Image (tube, rainbow, N blue to C red; front, side, top):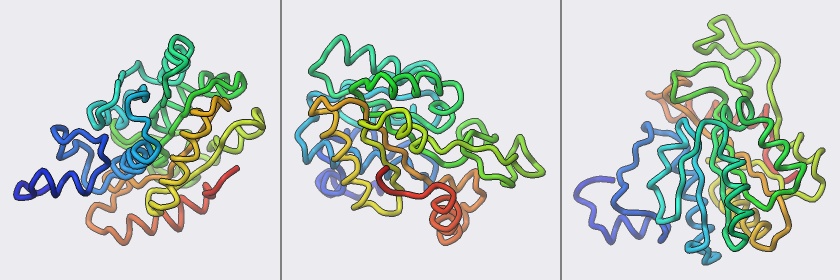
Length: 245
């Protein structure tokens, strides 16, 4: 945020549950994480759930959200955010437990935890930010990297294997809330956040929301917003279709 902006001006642009003392945020310029978190914050505000939220963040870019909100927040070991929030919810059934994870933490080291939480129908919301690579550690190949994408650990192009998690979770749990949103469509994303929170607030079981996000630094599109959103909308959203499952 520009220094000349007043606290009132900053507050008017942010969810009420956001912490002003954590701004400006620590994410890279153009990163999609702040847009995902903003959508979550507005959904929490609208539902009046701020004092019941327990917010768990994973290691990776997602850890930079640890002081983003005025929520009870815990940072976990890499890939362990989902089981930590499952345990917290079992210990405190009144909590609205939210696990905030990157695609690496969710679909690589944390894949077993995620799948079993879905199968058990644990009453938590898992939000996974999918930017197609490991971002904080320099742009290595992830379970969501597009076939042929040239990344740090695949300089000649990534292999053909990638994970479509919402489709998998829908298959193992027909009762779960499952959706995929995208940062560039904020009204739709905020509604998905709200619906996912209402699902677990009503004790209906597991809720899963994957959000397609941009990573200009590792996509090497820092000098062009147009190029960033072309990759996001025309490549990323083509490989990973958005919507409710």
